[in-house]
Image 1 (tube, protein in one colour):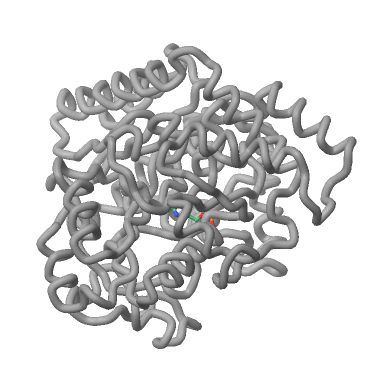
Image 2: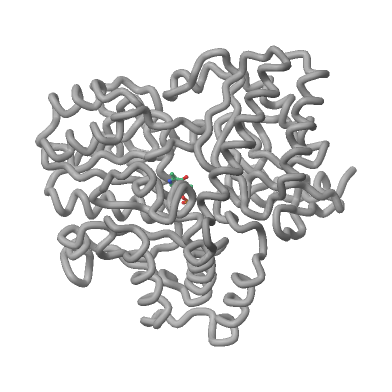
Length: 428
Ligand SMILES: *Cc1c(COP(=O)(O)O)cnc(C)c1O
């Protein structure tokens, strides 16, 4: 028995499923989770001493690689000064000013502790501002685990949502309407039926929680237009894409200005941080300025702010950071496509910048229904092979591969070779 297996058998006795977030359990790939002991740069080492090239990067935050010296130093320094005060600090001002300076649509911002919290709060702000209740989301888009966002993907477009999770009362999702990603008609239909009741449309501007699904030309522009026509707010959930596709996130990349934006992951540099912000006239409704209540004992935590500030400043101050990383991503994923083609495999690669994924399906994937045609057994086989060759991928067909700036060309070339070897011996 490996040490990971031993720990897992202990963990399941005292932690539901042995993990503190479900996908970590490796359930859909039929593996035992590897317990990680440490990580540095592009690599993670498990408790059995196996080292992996890490394509998860803590699900996005580690865009610079693990334990970047400047981030680590900032955290250690902040720790010396105190772990939490529950009072205003200078770093929070610096953080808010930095975010406002990097993302043009953000005029005011509030720090929270997770992406879930950011989304929950942004939705409350949108409802408070518009005085309306309904929210449009897209099948296959993930917005954290707050009640109103856990709506079954693929539920009837014209009907109210059906809860995806046990424990979510129907009342909590009655006002959540579900549309089809990349299908403006499905959004127009919802607005035709409920337009005056819709507070906001929330969307991942690049969907990265059903695998990676890119917005088709005109999709995000169309959402902007529909929202303007009906006086609804457009919320970009940039928890993954924020500071990933560009310094100004997907909105900077595509040139669309949402009313509100949510952040998480990269913004905390590996610490638990989220944020939501946007138009001043909306954000001024947040308590104590206005009547929309939202609070947090540890929000804006000094150590977390230190980590996030250090990482964001590095991203801002490294010349050509995004050009270089996005280029590396383009080359890598296009090479993956080539490897597939040469092996005569019909699978799909979707990618943008440093985000990408392989779908084990013949069909091009531009929405949730198409993503779901993937052969998850084939994915599991691929995952296990890569893991044993030291490549740590997200343990699910429906997650992204995250490249980090710490990965070298040589390491990525080796991954392509491993992938090629996999396809050679694969039965699928
Ligand atoms: C991860 C994620 C969230 C939830 O963030 P947590 O920090 O896990 O609560 C919300 N939206 C998107 C797009 C995400 O990828």
